[in-house]
Each structure stands twice: as structure tokens, then as C-alpha cells.
Length: 89
Image 1 (tube, helix red, strand yellow):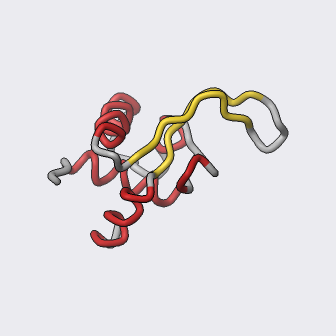
Image 2 (cartoon, rainbow, N blue to C red):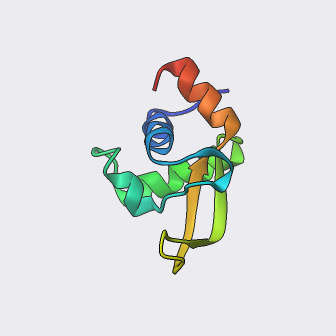
């Protein structure tokens, strides 16, 4: 499977910021801090592409630690974690 440089950077951000299975997800803005040279649009496009490839998951109706609605977000998938570990991201 081929992934672009932007997707690699986004996968790295997902690997650092999120957990598999929807345990901890992040918004696009939350991933910006881990992929400094990408803008929000590039991260959004990369997350969507990674989801189609099975390397990321999308969740709706997320809540924060206080139980308040936090919106939607992405997290790394099991396959994404395996690839990130393989690539040493």
C-alpha cells in the first residue's frame, strides 16, 4: 500500500495523539501540533484518505474527560498502528 508524505506525517500524528478502537480520538486541530508543516486542510484530506485505506477510524459523538460533547474525530486503527510501528513513525 502506498501512502503519501502528508499521510505519513498524519499517521505519525495519529500514532502519537490517539489510541486504537476509538479509545482516544482527536480533531484535525488536535493533530496540528504533531504535524507542524501541514495545515488543517492537508490533515483533513490525509485523515480521510487514511480512513479509506483502513489506517484510521472516524468516530462521531465523542465526549471529553468531563463527559461533555466534543464532536467528531479520528484515531489510528490497528492496521495503522502496525504500519506506524513498521515504519518506525
